[in-house]
Amino acid sequence: MYCRKNPVDTRDHPSYIRIVKKQYLIILFALSILLVSCLSLVMQNPSFVLREITLKPLSLTEMTLLIGLDVENPNYFDLTFKSFEYKVYLNNEEIGTGHLEQEVVIPSSSTTRVMAPISAELKNWGGSIIKAILTGDKLLYKIEGRIDIKTAFGGVKLPFSQEGHLN
Image (cartoon, rainbow, N blue to C red):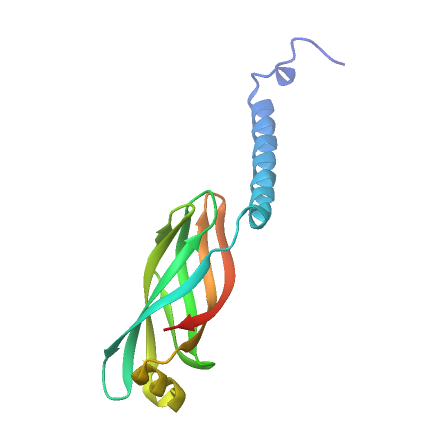
């Protein structure tokens, strides 16, 4: 039998409040998953252009390269890179790999220069790469990897690949 003065049926009862809180949490969780899954529809991928390579020899066979990448963010919101892993190819030969573990913020609708290190061994380089570097010829480059982007709803991992010519 229903009684109007039953404390369980009122909105002030602790069990009623717990049930409502659980329902709100479930709804918020479902909405956050929906927003993260739709983020790829809203967010445009950033583009990368290799602008410079600086050589820093460590020994006769090993060196660190510092590459200057222009990262363009076409979105109407800032992108924060949590981590950035990449491989760089020159004239279709892999010259090295690298990763950037510091956070990098790319402001909305702008281009930012990011300096990224690459560990490389000269013995793995072909003669065409060394010749092109020494003579100043055009180099075909390709950079590919994965970016971990921090968003308000969690992290998004995006693969990328960019090709071009380096003078």
